[in-house]
Each structure stands twice: as C-alpha cells, then as structure tokens.
Image (cartoon, rainbow, N blue to C red; front, side):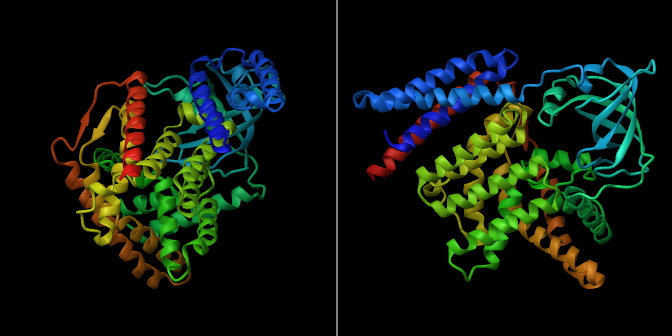
Length: 499
C-alpha cells in the first residue's frame, strides 16, 4: 500500500477516535491502551511476515496505531485531581493563595484576570497546605496596581470550580489551558516588586509598550481596533462595534488568527516581489516567527502562526495531495499535544476548517468567479471567503446560532484595507518611537483605513437581515453536511479530471 494511503488511514482514524472520545474521556482509557498497543505490534509483525496479506495488515496497523495515539493523547491530558491539586480545595470557601503569575495578564476596562500558578494555599480555618500545584484564574476588580508575568503574588477570595455560564461551557473552555479553579472576585497583591527576568516577560513588556504607543497615536475606537489587528488585544473594543463585526461576519479581523498571519505573509511577499516564489518562503516564515513572539506567543497566536505557515507551505508544495496530507499531519501533531483543541477550542476548529476550505474548495470555485473583476484582489477575496465559509459556516451556526448573510460582500469591501491598516499602523507606531511626528503622519494613513472599515461595518450591520438567528443545530446535521460536502468534492474532482 502506498505511504500516502497509510497516512490517510492513520490520520483519519486518529481524528475520528479523538472526536468520539470527547463523550467518553472520563473512562479509564489506560485499560485499552495495552490491548491496542499489543494488537498494533502484532499487526506490524504480520504485515512484514506474510507478503500475501501485507496490504491488509498494513492498513490494520495504521488504523490501530491511530487509535492508540488518540487514546494515549487523551489519557495523558485528562486531569485527575489529587491531594496536591489546587482545584481539590475549590469548595466555594474563602482562601488565600500564594504563587506566581504564569501567563500574560488579561487587562480589561473594569478588571484584570491573572492566571496564577499556585504554590501554597491557606484555608479559611488557617490551615496551610504546601506544596500545591495547578492554575487559578483570579479576577481582580481593581485597576491598580498592575502586576506582571512571573511576579510572585498573593490572591484572596472565594475559590471554586468554574461552571457553565448560561449555555457557555466555561469550565471546558478553561480546561484547554489547564485551569480548573477560579476566583471570580479576588484581591491580588504582591509584597515583592521584583519581576524575575524571563523571555516571555520581556515579550509581554514590549507588547504593552507598543500598545501604549498605539493609544498615543490613535483615538478610540481606532486605537483598540489597531491593537486588535497588531497584537490581538480586544479588551478596549466597544461591545457595540464587536456586535457589528459579528453581524457582518468580520469578527476574524479583530483578533490574531490565521487571517492576520496570512496578511503578514502577503505583506512580506509583496515586499520581496523581485525574488522567485520559493525564495520568499524563509523570510516569510521568519516574519511569522517574529510576529508571533512580538504579540506574546499565546496558545491562540501560536495556533494561528502554525496555520499561517501551513498555508504558506501549501503554496510551495503545489500538489493537492501533499497539501492535504500536510494539513492533516499538522492537525494531528497539535491535537496529540492538546486534544481539547478539537473539543472546546472554537478558534482552532474554525481555523482548521477554513484552511480545508481554502485548499480543497478554493480551486473548485474559481470557475464560478472568473467573470468578477480582479481589481484590488476583489475576485480572489470573494472566492477565498466563500471557500472558507463553505466549510466553516455550519460549525459557526452550531456554536453561535447565527449566520451572516452579508459576510461575503462585507469581506470584499473590507479585505483590501486590512493589510494596509496593519502596514501603516505598524510602521507608523515603530517610527513614532524614534520621531513622533513623522510616525504620526504614517499612522494617519492607517487611521483612514480603519475609518473606512468601521464605517462600512456599521453601515452594513444596520441593514435588515444582515444576519439571522438560526435554530440550534445538532451534531447529526453537522456530520451529514460534511459527508455531503466530501461527496460533492469527490464528484467535482472526478469531473475536472474528465474535462
């Protein structure tokens, strides 16, 4: 059997088993691992022992190994509380926790969320338990003082397990980051002003300084919007504007995603237009790496960077089969590291489906858009938007219960100005550190692009039925939709070969 087919057997089994295990993850999957591992070793041995049955046994070995990897990944990442786990003491009682800030503080207009790696806990009766381990998300309602990554802090408040907020599964959302205990209203302080030097601490500090400079250059809501484009920060964007972005299907442009990374790649490629395509690959990858580090290298940004590099690699490979396998292997590696991305991370799910849409359905839709003008990339923008929505929209409806009817048109009007806004905003902000007035002049060009995007968004969001609320969709409909989509893809592929 060809290696590519064995890869499809292995990867397909891994993804299907991992998806199914979501509803059985609390069972002791370790019991099934020795059986499957033994069966896989036997299958591999037989595959090379009997040439007559080599193809069947090779396929069986790939299927079993895919199942083993999926179950092992779940078993490795399943959280089992112990006497030393901080969430064991989340009994809705007032406690004092001492530890260090383990992630970038999430600063919002009325609060700051700190992810604290707990080292010690003092219970309400004075009992001190040391050491303990685990992460606590503590929400401090004060605006000052501000504490930083790596700083030792003390948090006081009611420690409890996160629960479901209306229909939002907040506990599962936090479990992606290994957080199983929260303080919804905490008092966080530090007696130590010394912040230990660290790489991520330096990156977060640079990011904060950059955002502060953006606030000097731009008024609101443009400052918060530009920060969202360049650093992924959404804390200052008004709820009204976010709602307008949601109604027009433009939410993806105000947070670091594969879309933003693609724009970085496009800008770098445009600057290196005089080089052959294959020589632009390394500078583009380096630019993605630097951009990822600059905005803090959070899990969501790293995921977006991987997806961006994946799209770039797809352009280099050219062949559809290689692109498809590259996408699947990338997803496999990411999910083997953290299976909860597949279950609870809407960003990963939508990014992955969008990449599939672009690589698989983008070329098929080309004949339907050849009459549309290519000026300012309108044809390509509309074609890629529709291809991405073809695979991502059903999941969007399932997750959010809303479908934007005007999204393709909105993306056509807005898409050409997003890279210009990012380019002028970044160059203007960086130049303003050296010479404020020249930097302000360049930043003004970015302001013009942002103003256009905001005005178009508000105008389109005000149109009746710009988006519609949809009935709650179940997984059976989702599976049926994607099964039909795959059948249509195969039919179109065969039709293209015949023609």
